[in-house]
Length: 128
Image (cartoon, rainbow, N blue to C red; front, side):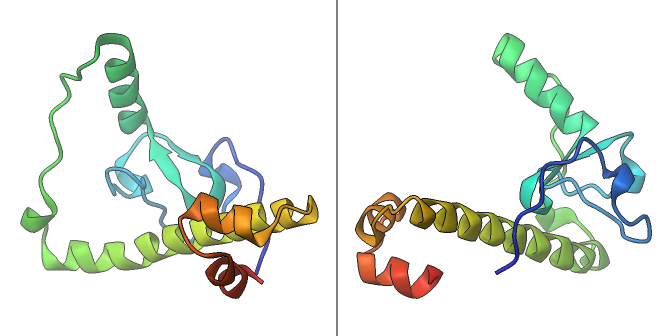
């Protein structure tokens, strides 16, 4: 499995030929002012950060909710499949890295399995 890269402050150092999507609202980078990159191809846009800040400060947010996915055009949904898959793959790589770090610390497969809610054997088969 590939190693997880360090978090980035923005998408500026990523290939500009790609379109990146907020992992929360699924808006593409060309529809938001800023997009912050994190581990595992997880991104968050400035608008979602603002919504989070509102909620943290007041317990609510006055920002209008996004339209449900059921209302999105088919082409838009199709365009989201690859970015969502890349996010899932990135998180899987991050999970693999954490397990490898735990194993390098001699943490048992039993403890790793317990933390994941799976058996020792299942953990070993999945991550070794």
